[in-house]
Amino acid sequence: MLEPHGPLHRMVSKLEAHAFLSDADRAALLALPFTLRKFARGTLLVREGDLPEHCAILVSGFACRHKMTVAGERQIVSLHLSGEMLDLQHLFLDIADHNIQTLSEATVATVSRSALRALAETRPAIGHAILISILIEASIFREWLLNIGRRDARARVAHLLCEFALRLDSRRMKAGQPYELPLTQDELADALGLTPVHVSRMLRSLADERLIVRDGRLVAFPQWEELKRSCDFNERYLHQGEQIA
Amino acid sequence: MLEPHGPLHRMVSKLEAHAFLSDADRAALLALPFTLRKFARGTLLVREGDLPEHCAILVSGFACRHKMTVAGERQIVSLHLSGEMLDLQHLFLDIADHNIQTLSEATVATVSRSALRALAETRPAIGHAILISILIEASIFREWLLNIGRRDARARVAHLLCEFALRLDSRRMKAGQPYELPLTQDELADALGLTPVHVSRMLRSLADERLIVRDGRLVAFPQWEELKRSCDFNERYLHQGEQIA
DNA sequence: CGATGGATTGAATCTAATCAAGGCGTGTGG
DNA sequence: CCACACGCCTTGATTAGATTCAATCCATCG
Image (tube, rainbow over all chains, first blue to last red; front, side, top):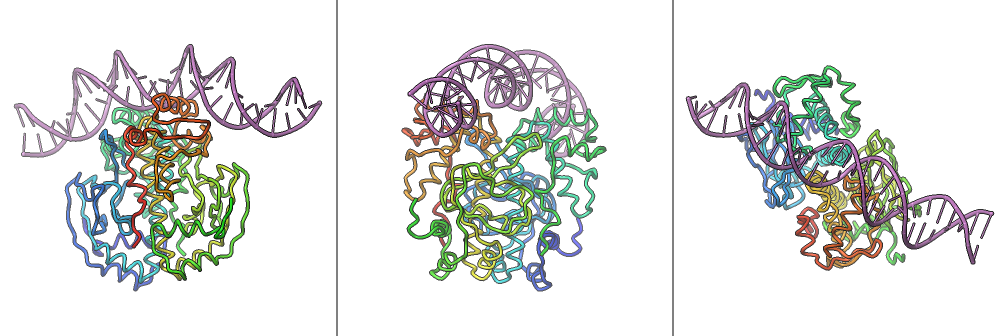
């Protein structure tokens, strides 16, 4: 994957989607010293209980954060696309309360926790942009709670597909585009509080009614509006396009 | 309830539990102009879609935040104790993505969004303290996702009782103390993604095994450690006592 | 070519939801 | 003061949705 503007460029654009950054702010972010590494699918980047020294930024690929019960059941609590910062809370909280793992082959830039923190303090616009990211993430957590707590399996699956479509497409600003889902059904199940078997059945059911069309993990949306309605999808919680001030 | 140090004092103490505030910071917070109001149980303070102009601080009583599906099913996404700020995300995001409601009779102080925001910007320690609160709240969201997504009904109920015990008792620093649960079983159900009927049965089941002892809504914990084990409760996610630096 | 990870499908089981009735306590109005 | 309504909780019977268990298939990869 080409990175015409350098590995951190997409992160900066994502921050700018919700907050104003001056040229100097942008330059300061891009000037952060980082180390770039490529990881295989399934690599654990942070483990619960760790005391992270670095902040990880996903340059390409997909990642998730998850927690486990003692019984070994896993709950994925968030999904991450390229350009997103994976470690926002570890910038300011010392002990990791969850795991961070790649979902695909991924390139990750790590910057020093203290350097980024210093930047957030000396440049209020950067601090503010990071704060907005944290708040939007929290809003997504709340919607996931509603999804898992109060919607049936079929709506849960559909809802996640809708969310992913919008999050992937914020640049193209055209939802309902087909996309390649970077999750196995096991991972979908762990994100939705279901079993893989049932996820398979629900995808089947959505496809049977032509609310989605599947080709392997490629998903298309011939009835985007109808799909959204069927799972009670209201994109407000993503706060896209909000709060540029 | 007497408020010997003024209505905002408890909020300041809560902020100080995780971040250092100077005397000047503390004074600046306590000097915020606010209006104090008492609300009946069940009052909606903020509605999804609102553009809040104020930030609400819970001075006494209990409150929750919740979202609803179109079908009218409710999911409570967080519970709040006195001294907590109910509106942290609305300080920086314009549109409310969920509702805020009192769970008991409650006194609420409202401060101007812009005044508090200005304070967070001019006094970095205050901004930092607020940020830590936001991050801990997000950590609780993640644990709730695990709880609702991956634990059975009995463990879910027990887990919420454990969390509440620790959050109530952080001052006394003695978990396992009996306490009065300020939630009806309907509200418990809405917080746990269950039905009220099933919550009733699970409380019964916990009481039958003497993991809890109930007297109305008063709950005691004769086997605190055993209860925690039974629901896989690990308090790390509350980040209590962490990050005073 | 066999091994592996992922997906699918069917059958049986189980957890939690639903439906329904009744109890308790409190507050209110006749 | 009593009757009644209402909110809240409990319990039983039944149903439904999701899990579990198991077999099979397919594609990919070493």
